[in-house]
Length: 158
Ligand code: DLZ
Image 1: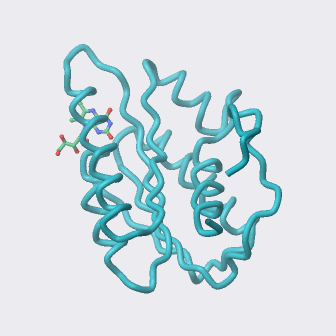
Image 2: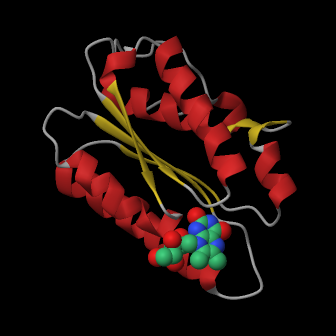
Image 3: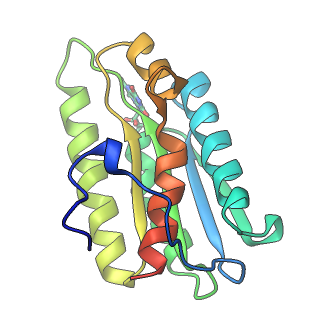
């Protein structure tokens, strides 16, 4: 791993591995649909841009981000799937629901990745507001769905 990779401005797309024969699953949460659909479009288009084949991208919806872990597991356990991208958006509310969901999905996704020894990417936004979310779903801070797709591709080259 490059020691120069210090922050997002160093997020390069140089020397990506050939993924033309790889199969990807994208699991997307239906909560905050405007945001998650934008993340999904970003991830899907980026996979195609960097060589994945349309027929090798499988998509699945789950009701909320809390369900991303199980959705990821159902994908990761399929031997033909090489990498899983999880997309969601949990907006900070007035209760601790936010903390529980974020912690659960981070732990769950990590567990699935290690259990199946496959990249399972955490493409979950955790903003304070809807506006901050949109800024990161194709707005002024880019699209974290794109970054999730690039991350999956990079991990297939490790
Ligand atoms: C219940 C809930 C709340 C309050 N907020 C969000 C959210 O901002 N983003 C999200 O993806 N999901 C949310 N959910 C739904 C939970 O993820 C989950 O679907 C339910 O708790 C049922 O397990």
